[in-house]
Length: 379
Image (cartoon, rainbow, N blue to C red; front, side):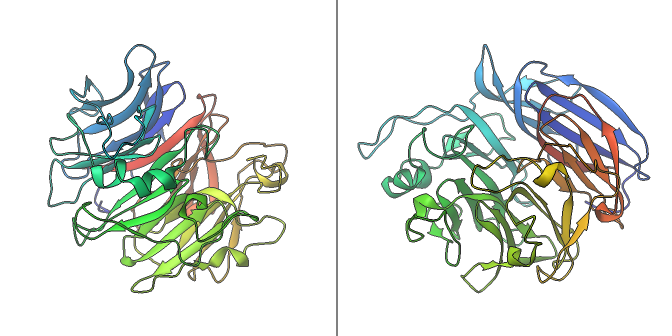
């Protein structure tokens, strides 16, 4: 994305459909387009940055089941994928599985124009080479006995099902891929997905479990720094982490968060040009795991020094009795000269944080529960 864009579009995926919000570079007024797919669960929606007009939407529909919809005209018309992500008949005497829903969508490398990746629940990794119309499973993940052990069962993991997420394509190398599994750790490929290595060194797990067992690792969101792809950030079930390559050990930078807030949350957002700047949105991580804003007072937190210190950003947000949180895909930032943050809440509110989250304003209320928010620039 570039700073010469004439307009922005926010892609809002919810429990009951999808919405597009169009705004200018001043980001002070938004025109709503939607709902699309009203009543269907939309887990994620992405705009292809390689052509600036193709949209993919990951949907779970009552009559069609889990599928992917594709639009080549910015949502005016949609067509279902001819072959959505689906598991093959398993090899290696592994139990058969069925895709419950596609959870995550990632466009491929800039040099691979029609390539996309998808992560599913239960955990599976899929690739499309025709712009999202047909999808093929990656057997090195989906049918590998060791990966299947790390994935656990459909009864394990997060309350709404185990999932493969945070699919990352290194902007320098289309063969360099990463993803996270909840649960099942962070994994990296240097050969386009044919083989994988784990990246869990330095990460903690819930007390009482063995950190050496990949099964017990629960990354919530993993991000690569656009300005320095050798740096990764992670919001984990057990804290906020940073990894600087060629190192292999994650550092828990969340220990510098205020003790009364903690460093547990779902989303992680990285500044488009400054690798030392990143944002999180904490949730209550006490023993009962309410998964709401701590003390009912929601706020983003920003670090501008790689995690050495954190600043609370709550101007304009509710100051009390706001018992919502922000899911792992529901917070993002644009790439304009002074980036704005965008987030969607579990209570159906869409917010913008001007000047990097310094001033929050409400864009929309009373939407269904928001699962994902993405922003894209339109020329």
